[in-house]
Image (cartoon, rainbow, N blue to C red; front, top):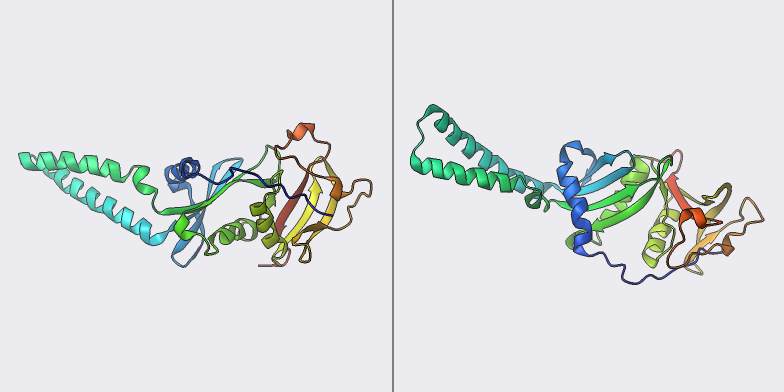
Length: 254
């Protein structure tokens, strides 16, 4: 019994899609809480709103480069500002102070601080829900294929212990992602009908079919192989069933 695979077209993430989230990360930088670090990358959590959480990964070396520029400009601006306060500043230095202020403003801008944010996991949840759903995952191209996305999810699931709910459709990419969850011994994954929480089933990965399979549902009247999604999912309120995969950290696992 399988969750039907739906192939979607035009689902590639365009660069403009991640831009607003990166800007949000930079603008909320003081709110971030560092969770873990590895190979020069730092994984941080930002609670933007009650029902919006972002896990950002940033390059420590790149961050130091950006902040070194800001620190240098701040020091030069301060030194000339002291001269201005004492009345000992020359005309040339006044011009330079004006230029430095403009440079400092640019150095502190969101645009100048985007470079050190190399990826993120954007999660949202409905009011009253305990589980989180993935809104968007993004990594800068040069950082892809290095296991960073996997670490982002492990930070959320294992270190923070969140409950992750799958999207309402399964794409090839999401199927690969959930395969990694199902085969990860640190995680527990099951299927549940969000319209009827008594209906749930075990989930396992069938190597022979290279697909997600379900064990017996707890209510025999609702077989999971009858659940399928159209390419454009129906609004939640109009569905008779809404089966999702759910993942959380296994008890007793680090």
